[in-house]
Length: 107
Image (cartoon, rainbow, N blue to C red):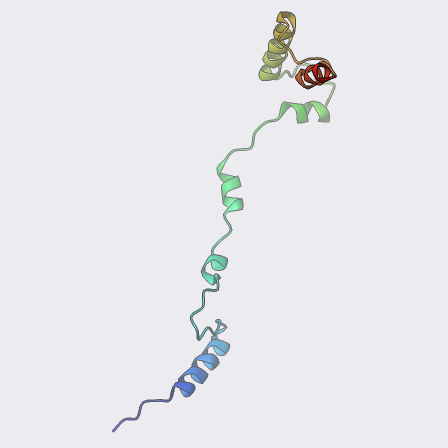
């Protein structure tokens, strides 16, 4: 007749097995997050997925003598800002904004 091993003997055997094989001993089955920590990091692969972008401002800073490089979007933005200024729709001068106007009404 076979006798079942005691629970303390089984837990001691599991602890020794974890020590030998380098795994974590978790007798209470508590959540440790080990599954997430074993996974590969996602950041480097995500960065490698997208091609590097060319920043013309950085190139201008490195080599300011290359006057031929112009960012088309920056030129368009400057034109839009200039057009808004001509129409009177640009940002107000310092101290002439909405807050300053409201402050003047109170006094």
